Amino acid sequence: MTTESFAEFLNKLKEIHEKEVQGLQTKLTELTTEKCRDAQRIEELFAKNHQLREQQKVLKENVKVLENR
Image 1: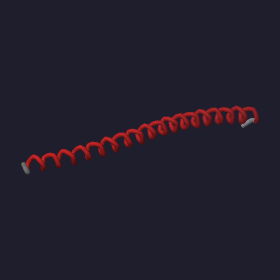
Image 2: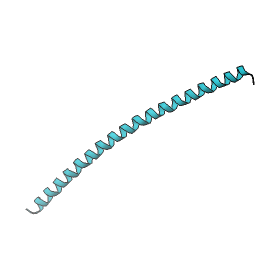
Image 3: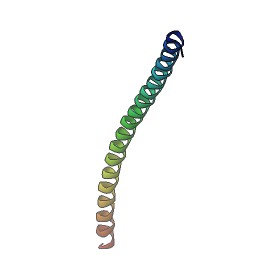
Image 4: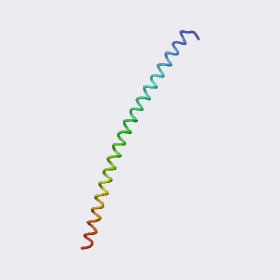
């Protein structure tokens, strides 16, 4: 292998490496964004669950009051 062909090979390897790194960075960005969306959705569902539990509690109390009449 000559010095020139080695330099070409090295440049080609660097290009491939840079493309792979860029692809992985893009994937990491996508996954991070998805993680943030998931965390936000979990918070929304937790709040809704809490709200529904409170409503259920009130409804059960109302049922007891009506049953005792």
